[in-house]
Image (cartoon, rainbow, N blue to C red; front, side):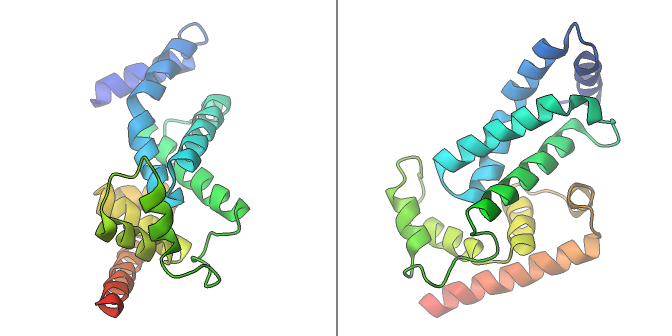
Length: 183
């Protein structure tokens, strides 16, 4: 979306007459991106669908709080990340995969998910990512899968680029170690 298109969309979102139609466009335009962002955090299709629905409900109810200080996509990503983390906290699963789970439980869950189209290695990568602490997992997902710039992540997560780079580096080391232990 060009900046001009986004500015037009924001104007339409600000106008009560065009708000609903503009928000429908936001949903069409950002649904898939937000779905995959959320899916990488919560892992299952059903959970991702629920979280994305909550993201759009929250965005709709807080449209008046969008102050145009960031891009619309950044604002939606911030809501999506926060909703995903809140969802995991509610499941009491947010910091690491519990050691009470049998080894490979994330792999088993993903391989049984009819919407998961990856292979065993991709499922193991998701297992390694799920074992990361919340911040490292979020930073890794945004950088590795979304190819998000550190400057954009800094705005999204309200932290410094240096700490984000450190988190990503540590996450990569932990994931590499996870795979080394399985060889």
